[in-house]
Length: 102
Image (cartoon, rainbow, N blue to C red; front, top):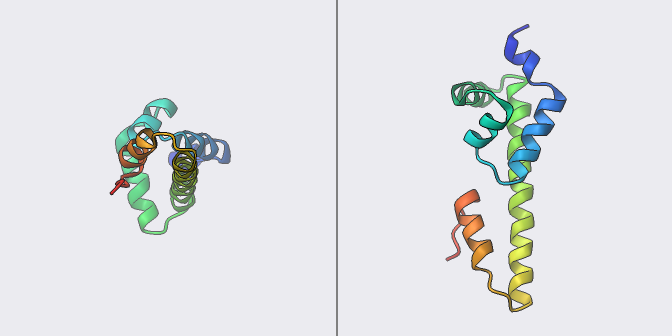
């Protein structure tokens, strides 16, 4: 079994997913969990080929990011409904999730 397979445990995946849901990008997650950005890129490439456990790991990260974006969209809608300035939310969505406010 490869070393990477031993590293990608359910607990490791959960930790990385939680960090992704907080809005951290791949580089920040790598720093937090002490893996290199090259390792992350390799895992992403292997996931794209459908290899396990890389595919499940990257899908978990994508799901966490989608949940974060959905929560922020709901907060943006609430700000608009409550006549609060939604600029902060739009900026977050643009910077973190590459969604534009236009």
